[in-house]
Structure formats: C-alpha cells, structure tokens
Length: 118
Image (cartoon, rainbow, N blue to C red; front, side, top):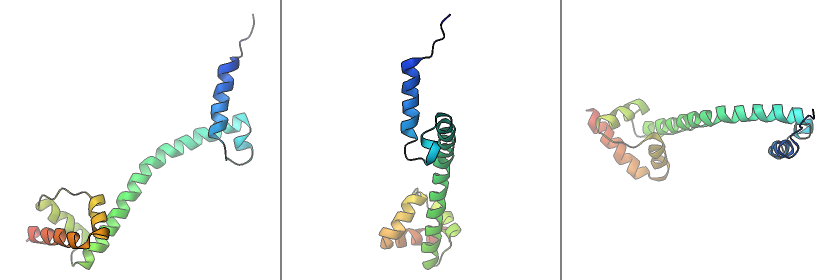
C-alpha cells in the first residue's frame, strides 16, 4: 500500500507557518520543527497579552485620573464615588481623555462629583 504524503496541503500549511515566522531570528524562521514550536508559543503569548493590554490601559487611566483629580482637591476614589452618586456614566477612558484634552469640562465633572458626595 502506498503511503500518502499530503503533497499540496502539507506544503501550503508549511508555507503559511514560514510566512508567519518571517523576521524571527536564526532557525526560528527556517527550520520546520522550530518554526512550529515558536509560533505556537507566540500565539499563546499573544492571546495572554491581549488580556494584559486591557488591564494595563485601565491602570494608566486610573493613574491619570488620580493625578488630575488630586490637583483639583479630591482623590480618585472620592471622584468615582461622587460620579456614581451623581449618576454620571462616563467610563475611566473618557474621563482620562477629558482630563487631558478638556480641563474645563473635567473641572465641571469634579465639581459635580464633589457636590454629589455632600
């Protein structure tokens, strides 16, 4: 019985992998087994880091909000508490952008949060 080697599909699969490994150093872009191992690990890291990126951006927004709100005489936690009590539905990303690009609007929001806490 003849052994089937999957000629065209196998070559196409290898070509896809080698194309994805373009730019890797040394055997990581030229040796089939190493390319396969490297890409599997790279895909696992990319899955993990898509989650981590969201986490890191949220941390950045919170740091910016804390700094901007402290300049205006209120802490970050007090700001968020006041916004919840005032039913302001802006998220941290929008608040952070507002603190950077629209300081007068952010001042109004901080004043609203302060008045809602009293």
